Length: 66
Image (cartoon, rainbow, N blue to C red):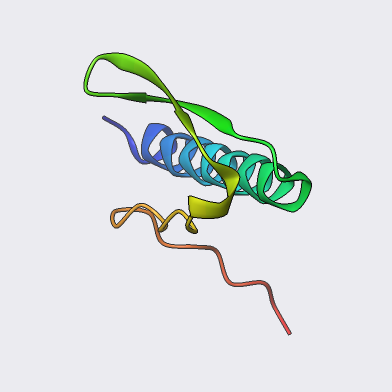
């Protein structure tokens, strides 16, 4: 894998993580359940039980210049 591919993978992973966080926050704010894939099955999760999704351990967030 090249450095360019690694950077693309990191950027895609960050973007997907951000999208998941936003979707969960919207569902929680609206009180709507969210559907997840768990143990090979589709599961409805109550909005009140949603917790923040931790960032992937192998992806370091980019620091914006101050």
